[in-house]
Image (cartoon, rainbow, N blue to C red; front, side, top):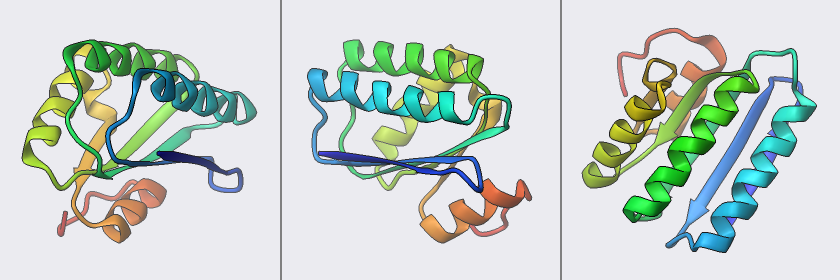
Length: 128
């Protein structure tokens, strides 16, 4: 299950993923995120990605995530806050972001409030 929402005022696309994500759902998630990004074109897009309730992905899904991150970067993705509580998932997401060439735009957090503050301000947090 997932939820994608758009905070137009702050140019934030939010994704909350819960449980394992199936292939067809991943396609829908990416489509919804790209649609939101098109609405924000010309602005510095920020993404708030809550992965606390999901699991690591298969290599095929990781490849699709990498391709999606590259596409979002082309659409203006400026900063990404990922909330991750699983160290394995954090490692996988680090690798995917590095391979996608967006690792400098991504910060990982365990606290959603700290992540939101960083996302909106850009200031490096002391309490990730």
